[in-house]
Amino acid sequence: MATEEKVGTVTGYYAKIGVAAIRLTDGELRVGDRIRIHGHTTDFTQAVESIQVEHRPVELAERGSEVALKVPERVRLHDQVFRVSEG
Image 1 (cartoon, rainbow, N blue to C red):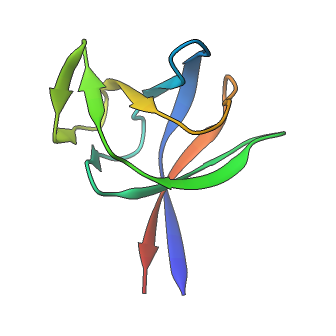
Image 2: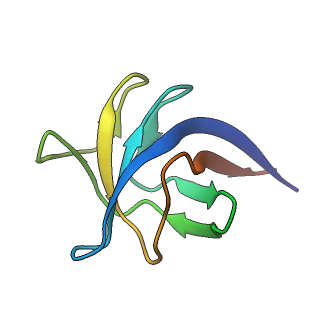
């Protein structure tokens, strides 16, 4: 069974490039993690393929960071971001 741990909140969305800005309020995020973005009209799961902090690619973003992630769908301000763990 999958468990979800909140890691952050969406703070912006850039439609032209399909990128979400996320503030990591509750945990860290690394390339390869599976995340779920959930909100009033948003609900999807994806693998984290790349993370950018201040326009630089990183493998791991610490709690407290502002990060940018490619997303397959539109996300909205205040959508919640969860790390999904199997088992």
